[in-house]
Image 1: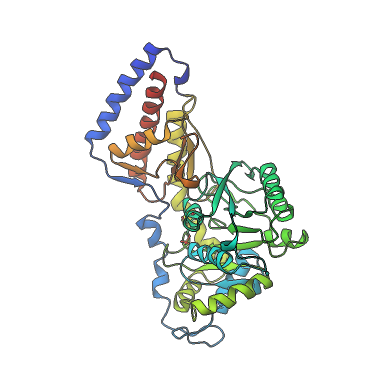
Image 2: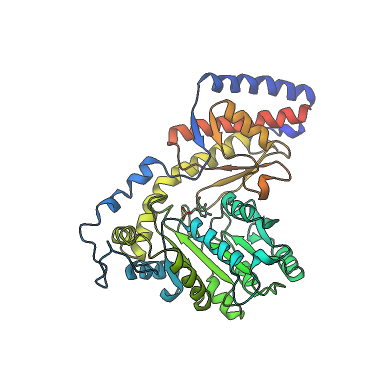
Length: 422
Ligand code: PLP
């Protein structure tokens, strides 16, 4: 346990600052060049998936289709089957698409915006469209809204998911609120897993907008590192609540196989899929079936995915250990930070004293460690308290990460002490 810096006298703070300045200068002199800014796998993690590259000696799918040719809008049957088994979603709810789930989310939003759904007014024709954005959240979700001029309403996260009292109140009162972004398992960046109650409440809540949609981005749905969290079936919950069309479910193998060269899917009710198919079939003749085929041949089946994820967890656990142990050793008891301890996913989220996140990121940057921009995890990049920082431990090596985390903790202390001395 460090000493509680927030309770130090001015003289003690000045002493502390002198010591921290000295340590910080030591890091600057090392000319570090480390990147903890994005959730990218390291080279060694990618190597674990290399067999995918040699899986196309035969390119005929299980139903005898030549995967080299056009066609198959919904994806090859073996891919739909694998994801159905893995995620517990009916095969006929799934369209396996191209290489990016974000792309599918953008297209889904665009379709609702341009064409509308279920005979309701297309969102582009409405005076205002708003989306609930549990925050901190995934920056690129928020950019999709920003791109289309959809007003974002931040909703605080709790340890069980978004603050559901607030969500229920907002959606009941305002028919301009058309949807909510959700990363229900090991959320980006906090690693929060939605409780069964949260899933049920999202599925059943009364919304003023009849065309309200949940964008259910289960990007980290199989990314268990320390222990497995279970997620309640959102489709079952929506159907039971009489809202079968409420959810658009997204998933991809970007963080399973190769980011940018994985396989993504969208899943939804029969009614929604009919609309999606109609527009998607204008947009493309079919997705990359060769990529689907080689990915499925490598992963084999749901158990194959789980086996592969255990390999990745063994690769990632030491990195999460480094982050969590260093935070504990350097910052616990200092009164200067609190952080999440995720059981899986790709990130750790750290809250520093109010008004210090930008300063911490700038200090780290000046010493050669690139962090995710302060505020990036909030709508319009505005963290109202300027306190949240996302740590992405996957890309650096363990040695680099250890160094980067030690520097990070010095930056947090320095920014905190500077603030207290103001
Ligand atoms: N959704 C979340 C929550 C993510 O964190 C990421 C990548 O970091 C993505 C989606 C991107 O997925 P894809 O590569 O399938 O577009």
